[in-house]
Length: 357
Image 1 (cartoon, one colour):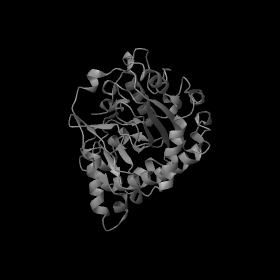
Image 2: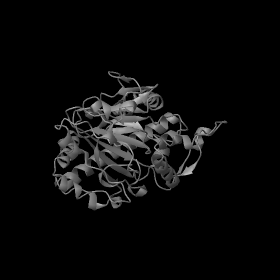
Image 3: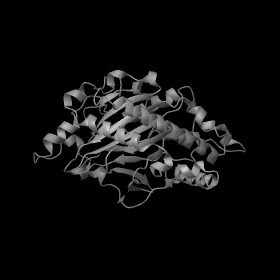
């Protein structure tokens, strides 16, 4: 996901309000949300477990080497993996509980209270939808709240909810724990790549990150809409927390969509475009999407971890020693993000093809 000032989004109807009125009406879903052919174009596979990475085993000298290999395999072949239970990724139960509670409470507020945090024309930060660039564009069946979280000075407090009153504290504590988890993962990813342990952490120094909370209302024609269109993340690393127990994440692998069934208490981690390029294609930024439930709401919270704004996005030189060939062009991070938004304007799912050599 992008920095908040990288681009805006056209205002469109609030989906939560639309769903409340439409689901009991007997009418067909509005045409701008219908994606029947696209939704049915490829096979969906259920019950296929994605890799599990145990942070506790990574930190244990006796099992670290074996678990680093497991981590590297997950990043290469899947681009997605799950942290083990809370006792292993170390985020306290109460931190997870509090952020889940406050995020869910926010979406229970009256519509006018949420609209007070509405996005401005030049920014995706705030309450609304993302990447709506034309009046003819197909829309996702979802609303979102998008916030810059770290560093603290990047926050625009106009968009932070004052209700529930504990919202900011809950997000603060969760993002601090997530930053710690990410720092650990980056160190072990560097080990798997064969570069200096702090190499990746230096590129993500200060760990700029943003939060996108997605609210997917129920839709009785769930098979004809997307909650979130197929895409890859422009970030380095994304940590996804399921706020309630309704699943809907799918990842694309080998021409099929894999329905993800997370472990109880796990954090879902996925590789973004930045890490695919830095690793020279060793790691995979996987395409993913969200579907909706016919009669239950779904809520998720994604933390996007970004590199420092001054870095060059290019394969790490250490990976090219001994005659290795760069598989991606080099580009400054600001230009990388401009091209990300340009790809969104063109309706593309990923903009990585622009950088492949």
